[in-house]
Amino acid sequence: MTIHLPCSSTSGPSAGPPPRWWRQLWVLVLAGGVLMGMALGVRHVQGLFMLPIIAERGWSRETFAFAMAVQNLAWGLAQPFTGMLADRYGSWKVMAGGLALYAAGLYGMTQAHTSTALAWSAGLCIGVALSGTTFGVVYGALSRMTGAAQRSRALGLAGAVGGIAQFALVPGVQALLAGTGWAGALLLLAVALAVLVPLALPFQDRGAAAAPDHHAPDHHAPDGAGRQPLHAAVREAFGHAGFWLLNLGFLACGFQLAFIASHLPAYLLDRGMRPADGVAALALIALANVAGVYVCGLLGGRHSKKYLLAGIYLARTAAMALFLLLPLSPATLYGFSAAMGFLWLGTVPLTNGILAQVFGVRYLATLFGFVFLGHQIGSFLGVWLGGLVFELTRSYDAVWYGAMALGIVAAALHSPIDDRQIVRTGLAPARP
Image 1 (cartoon, rainbow, N blue to C red):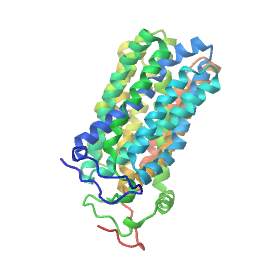
Image 2: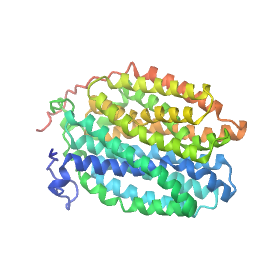
Image 3: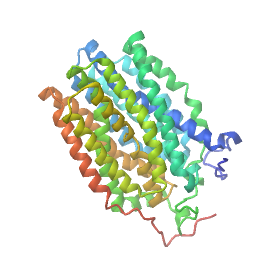
Image 4: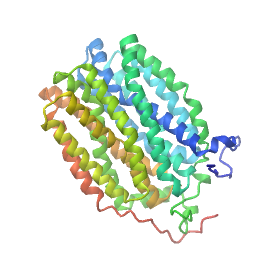
């Protein structure tokens, strides 16, 4: 199926339409999924690096956790601005720059001999890089380059492709750690990310300047949508109660996922399980996420997205409760990993879909960036408090309980969201 991209000029004189085959939906889904999956996959396996790095450097878990917390916070703080850059200048430039910065951050980790240097490289540098290579920019570009009827499915497929990439990285990184050590593994990952830059080229989407504001399935924007400036779109979103409910609910998502991804391998070792069990758990989470994101993308095109999100948060809470209540064994660990993996990133296309449904796709990367900031504040707290609470109590139990409580709160926050399309008046009609 051919996706016809906007044909108006961009701000740059050298911009031109990409080769015709780059406009195919399968190319966009595959390129976006692999790029996003590799970026998220390297982040997903950071927990495997914690113990070897702190053992060699003589640091505490809290030191490593703080750097990861800075990464999550930097990601969230940068996301609105990288979203604006993508909306203004085109997504592919932001993606390419993000991959280069990511590679630089991984190299910097190998040279970090102080906690401050680790916070700069693994924290600030990689955090900003993630904002240009993951959900906000990739899903924003895909949403602009696909019609409303295809959008939810395209996002789900891209997420599934990304999940496969994440799954493949887990055993691959474990093999690299065993064969080259943690520094060698980081260097090879840096090279792998750098060579992915060409995958950004299909996303020459021209940014918001040429993007129609497809609000409804019939692709007719409401009155004034075509002329709405960025500052007006942001002000409109900030005045919408549902926008803030999404933001607060997404905080719980970030807390849960960042805590589990960063601390689950160490938690399992503390409970007497083998390092291989932690690797298998992360791999199973990534594998189950493939199915989960795709299913959530399909369901989001047919059912209420806000109620699907509420159900995901309640199901996560139930999975964590059972994991803590049942005796820890390989069977219970793998059951928990499969359940959490299925519920892992399905929240992202659904949240993105609500924003597109209510506000349109013209400034979707920017608006998602602001909502994602809430997610990353939660990620900062989940990673950092996980390390801090462990250092103070020698246990992760309090953090598990906090993650469950946040899941219940998030489910309650999503139910009252008004997800109806905004009808704009008082502006000039959109140009066809």
